[in-house]
Image (spheres, rainbow, N blue to C red):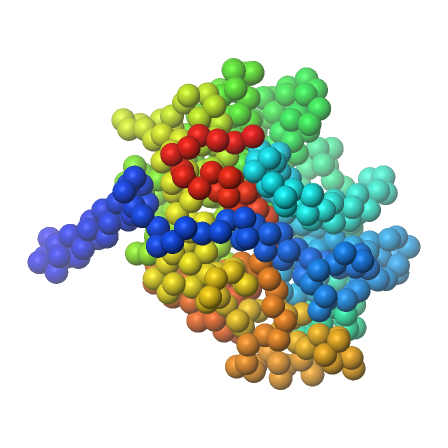
Length: 464
């Protein structure tokens, strides 16, 4: 090894040691005690800014108005309501379903920790589920998208002014009878935005796991066990999100084992342990799970905060299951306690709220410094109240390119954030990979913030 290579290796090991110390050490102190309750309130409020349809009288983000009131009409169905997934004006059913599930999971596991914000969180879930019920009301048909993504992305206009096609996309062959990714039949419409890259297998197990949890029916229990290997429960253990749900499946089902209710699912607990080990610096150096010098978990690609909140939620959920069972994570010759898992999750939440090298909160409206030029049409264009006249598809370009801060605060929105190990953030509308918020970033953050608002000390074993 050359002297230069040796020096580089020493630096790499030093950086890794620093990351371990920062993330796992009991002595690692945060810069300030955050108001997790306030952050939770704002995290939920964000969803009001993403609403489509006729807004209710208690709408609090008043700069938003009714939109998409004729969605589905051309196809003879009512598909009004639901959420725009990010900074555009399309309703994508695939990530919306994941968003609703993660919001619900947070309420199920940490419901009491939501305190006075529990009802507003339930309303946020209901706005999505009411729409999803409409989208699946017709027998043997699933409406998976409203809006032409390519035409929509060619415009920069308020949802209240939309004049792009509100095309409705449906899938006739679905679920267990006709196996296949929904994007196989709708590739031109849903890809590359929300193509099902990981395949349909995880969705079948994910659905069966939740149906089993909700109904306790033996048929779902048998389905899960029978299809565990066929549907790849142990695949892609380093991933969890709207596309690949295997890690979430293993954590969810592991609760049955840890609560002493079902040893039948022991293999899922092993898979969950293996997944947790890949997230713990100093215990496993998985090539796709890394930490920045400032302590942020990151995966190569855009919208990194989705990985941060989703993986942190699983860390927290699993830590609570372990705490109640008096268990630990087994990582080969070493192990990790539930407290260690909670510390890693809390460190990520604190990074989002401002404990990072830039001293910037990545949640709009929280803290003294936060992103002002987020990649979001409704936030960046004048509100209808401020500018009653319609702003056309191309007329919005002037606002898109403007260096001025967005006129409407999308309070609670968490942006994509740093995308690599530099801890850098440009706060630029055009850099959508870093400046665009999404519903599936905020969805798991609700549960995290609720828990830490009630249990700010990770050494506490708490939960609902």
